[in-house]
Amino acid sequence: MIEYSMKALSADELSFKVNPIQATHDMRFEIKPVFSRRIQEPADNPKIRIVVLECKVETTAESPKPFNLTARFVGVFEVANVDTDEDRRTFALNATETIFPYLRAAVTNLTADALVNPFTLPVISGATLFPEDRGSGQYTVRFDPKSVN
Image 1: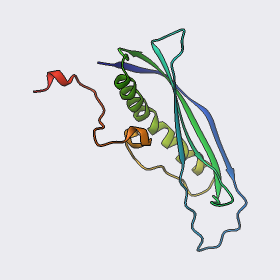
Image 2: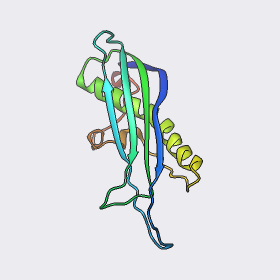
Image 3: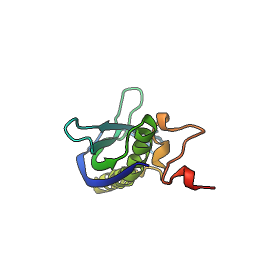
């Protein structure tokens, strides 16, 4: 069974910029944040995993947004027994679930501090944040299945 613990968490980047859009009172914006995750395994220390979780909102000509936003968090985890692809997948899901609430709070606070209507990400499981993590057989392992009757 894998074991992990978060040893450090930091905001690598928090940025907000208001876009000069001439909005009418009945204009609606569709704001769909783009999430990314990167997991690094340092070659010099196999017991460490660095997880970078990022949320971006960017305006484009086709889809204008009232603001651009970037929130990127870096978590450092100490891990043990991460040997198989399934172990790596389980760790990725659990690390995402661990970091996502901090990312969510940062996005809300960043927009509120900019004196715009706070943009709040939904309360969701980190296991559904990325398409590659979704699936009918998905679950987060936190127990030894052999011990369950």
